[in-house]
Image (cartoon, rainbow, N blue to C red; front, side):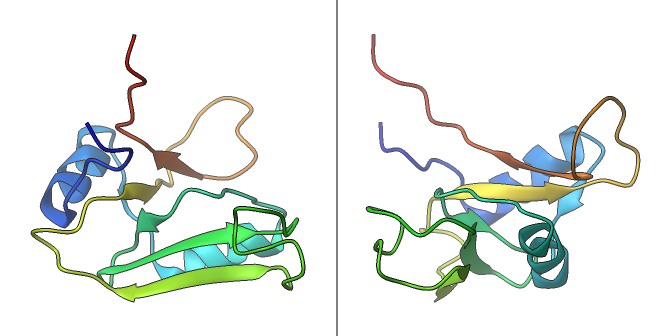
Amino acid sequence: MGRYNLNFQEAQQTCQDQDAVIASFDQLYDAWRGGLDWCNAGWLSDGSVQYPITKPREPCGGKDTVPGVRNYGIRDKEKGRYDVFCFTSNYKGKQRFPFYQISSYQPSS
C-alpha cells in the first residue's frame, strides 16, 4: 500500500466523519504562520495538494529552501492519493490549531 491513500472524495468523507471539512488554503496558510510544520502533502478544499514547512530540510523541499507552503498544484481528484488537511471549529482539548492532518498510512508489519 502506498503512503498516501485518499482520493479527494475519500478525503472529504474522512473529514466529515470527524465533524470537520477539508481545509482551505487560507486556513493552511494561517496555521503555517502560527508555526505548523508538516512534510506530508495533503488535499485542500480547492483540489490542490500542499504542505506547510517552517523548518526547511531534506526531503521536505530541500534544506536550502525558504519556509512556506509547498504546492503540488491541482491534482486528479479521482486518481490522486494524498493525506488530507481537515479544519473544524468544534475542536476540544489542547490542540494548538483547530486544524489537523489525516494520514491513512499504515506501516507494514
